[in-house]
Length: 124
Image 1 (spheres, rainbow, N blue to C red):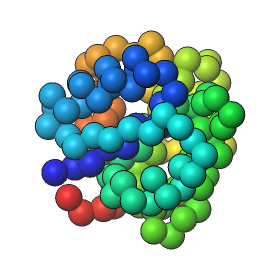
Image 2 (tube, rainbow, N blue to C red):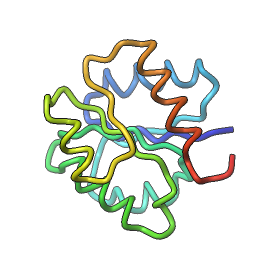
Image 3 (cartoon, rainbow, N blue to C red):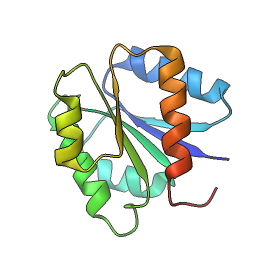
């Protein structure tokens, strides 16, 4: 089963995305507190990380760089989620694989997840 890790500080968004993705058949876990996120990301075994860009006390771009610079994680697909109109620029700067603009359309959200989870270099 493909695993997705959602890093999001808005509980409603985290809960909604989790529900949607579990209904699609994915194993989903979430992080809403960021001190010590490294160990949680390392232990997640995620094929895809959905990462909010603007987190309380952290910037999603920094977490994305951590993932992409880590030899054990760099095959994990990272998709930024943000209402920031410059998310496409930040995606390039941070090395993310893709992005989802908030508020997201349900069909686009699911299709984007399917696209990038299948691009992950990790085995199911």
